[in-house]
Length: 169
Image 1: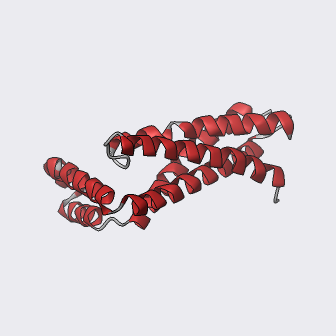
Image 2: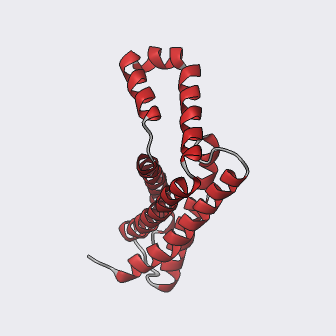
């Protein structure tokens, strides 16, 4: 059923977590690093903290006898709003920063694909390599934000599952 308390906690902790994730992306950008490459993984650090603090808050003030499924719903809500907020802000950043930021990311992805070409062709095949290269070259701000959303949501769901087990009654 629809539970407003779960949505309120999800929005409160999810948006806060998303803004903190985006602040790390901005910090990386202003330091001159590619915030969408390897260094961008640092922006995933706030997600488990937002999930654990949100479920703890929900358990303390709304439902002291929280079960696994309700904890998972709270964690999924927080994860969804974190991923949504952070990816929307990443989308806005790619438009405000201009094509230079996106071009830097595309060049880094092409270089990474070219350096490990032999291993990737051996593991996945030439067709997969060509498709990955084409996808890297045709990256748009919307595809970058969509990929960011999916990675944050799936990663956050793992932590939501762990937190739901931890906080169950």
